[in-house]
Image 1 (cartoon, rainbow, N blue to C red):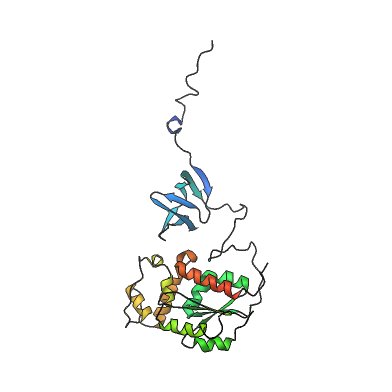
Image 2: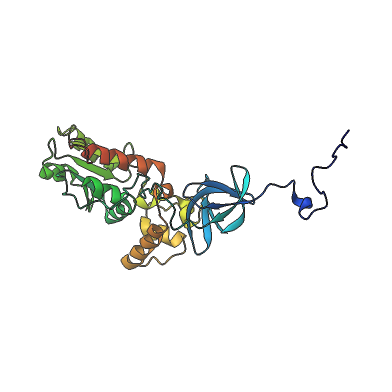
Length: 284
């Protein structure tokens, strides 16, 4: 009778101390992959200069160096930069839409338009939805204000195939803005004009406060200029229009995608884009 082999291999061979441990595998980094590092869990939102940027569900971001120490689906991994020659993976625009594999050719602008209340509003929408708008051929124009909105709508002369979408700041019940919008809605344009509004006093507050390192945006008294008061509370120069412009650009620079914006703004803008493109055949 053959002797029973009590040990399948040499228990004293090199590496026996770590034989029971899970092996770390190399994984190329991917956008939106959810990983853990130490006690921080978040989705990959970018990488540069040897660091991986993670964002948790509260919008907080932290950066960690490429290499071991990460957990992916509970398994230890070493994140590596993406492979240069790897097959192409789906790309997405800043708004979260699927991007084309090749740059789209220039498209003729549709007769329909989207108007937004203010230059800062237009700049924010361009940064997040610019690729999508160019793809469907929709032009965004900014208004200096909406006090004359009924006359502006009448001058635009909306009709089927020439729709108008308008994004309004501080559209809450009882506000001046709500009364102006009611005038537009009762002027017979309901089928070809859509006015959407967010509750924020200014588009600045549509940016998640975590992007400027705060839990909430500062409350500005009614008798203080909103933008100057906000910049003062943030500890930024606020003396004149140039300071306001620089302050806004600093805030805008923190916005990378729709994830950095409050959900209600994302919803309003998407509705406007869908509305003004309804009368046109889908672009292939």
